[in-house]
Length: 58
Image (cartoon, rainbow, N blue to C red; front, side):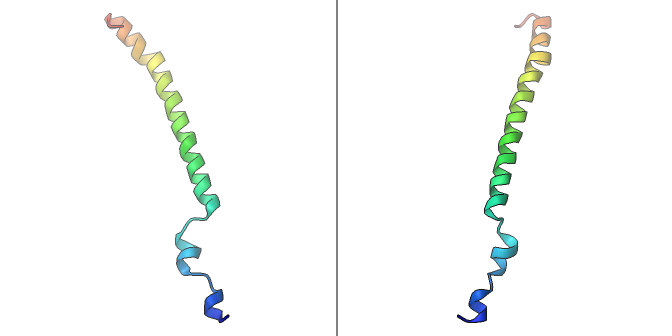
């Protein structure tokens, strides 16, 4: 095997994320979606519904 065959491709080393990085990104995305959902629920319960009740539309 020549030296060129042993050296990893530049793209593999520097451009493509590792499997761990991909999994970490995926988990951060899932966590952000969960947080966003909880916050939307809180805003709806604390702001939107009381305002609709005040206006007599809920």
